[in-house]
Length: 245
View 1 (cartoon, rainbow, N blue to C red):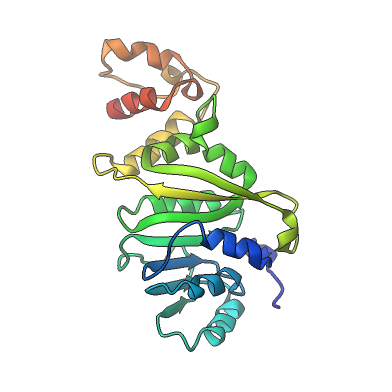
View 2: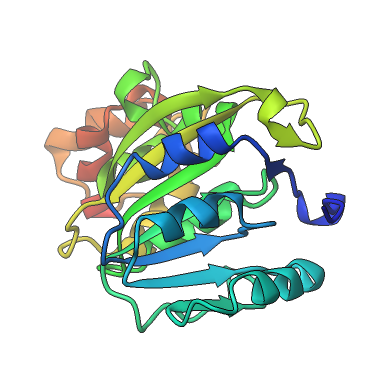
């Protein structure tokens, strides 16, 4: 086995039972599937057993790319691209299913990047740091944050199960969870503007909104909202301010 690279945040999943449990969270039969950062192909092997219509593997690591090219050379429907998932052109896909054991140092950035592409993906099944998974979990939060707000507006989100550190090589110090994200049909929302708004309004979460953003033409009936902190508003209230942003 190739040694994981710390510079790429690599921790290889080595437990086949966990791989099967992840793949069984959805149906990939005759569907378009993308796996980001497949590593040595542990999850890939389980995807192939389910007979997808098309399988794209995006692997940034040069040595792993060569390994995967050799391993799956007999499968005509498997395409392997030596690329960064943030730079890949997904325009040829429609309603694809994404799997990934995301490097902890890029998970949030990539999730937001993928969710900004309307209609390209039907669901994302991802392994992320437990702390990040809980931060995105709008279903179980007393206070909002930039991630939970953004995720709730554009998707249906759920934490499926926690993963033991022992199923990775090398064994990470932080805990992981498998999550499922299903993008909503958010055609009426300018997703780029929503991302900007979420960044701005949660930039100083301890300050009143009136001290962070200037809503010049805000309807008087909503003025009470800007005298609160963003984290204390629910998503419906935040969307009112977003529409005035």
